[in-house]
Length: 327
Image 1 (cartoon, rainbow, N blue to C red):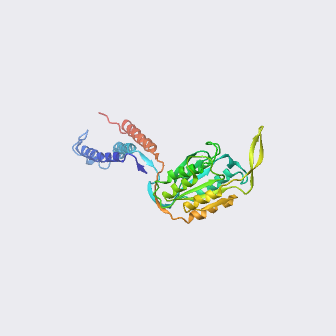
Image 2: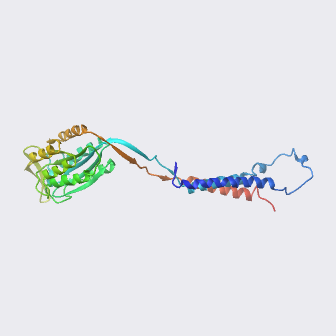
Image 3: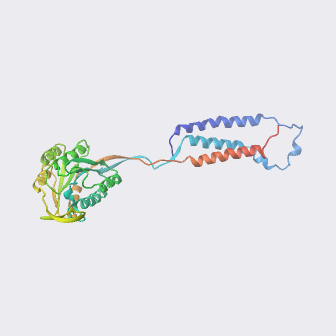
């Protein structure tokens, strides 16, 4: 248990002079009925009131202690701590153009990529990971974070149609670079996943690769799709018809991007092929990250308030019943 306003606990020191004053006052009090000799009453049995004589004062002290504790705001929480972990900084750049709906990977390319990305994130608990999405344009779905629960929720929300259609590979790289360029990590990585050729954007893929290289960022490129043709769902008159679309992946450009930045190019004709990138990333040099862990605090004053109220109530009852004084 911790206290949000711990300085209020110093008020407990004020109870010391109050207790001393009470003791001194009891010693100076004169008896209401004075007699010449009290020895005759020495063997008289004591009433239970004698044992309760100081109970109201004790109850008042307890109540004051509890009130001071309430003012200090007791809270339960897990300890705050700074921890040092080993990890790397990774941006996932994922193509969300409509061609990613092709079903040569099951259930389709995009869903297969999302499943593997989620598995990848779960397998890298100590890494800073973020997501950049691109089609005809590019934007950051989630910046670098070690909060992988939030990140996984973002992955679930990835879908086609979020931006203008097309394939702006260079813009996807540039966006990811903007998130990694100021990183202090020794190893900075972009995992670029696409199923097409660059046909949009103001930055060419190779220019993006040169920019990444200048910041010491390594790019792993993944071409998603089978060879030849792939079934693509096409809406016709309220129904879905499948047409075989040619698989056009610019493997030459993706290979050059990876080569420029000392990365690797992978061709993923199946979901299992996507996992090959993990083994390469695991070989990277890791760097230490300082992570501050915050825990949710909960106010715990309620029981102290109830006990303080009961103490005050009991004191009032004792003073006005069994310990009532007659002037």
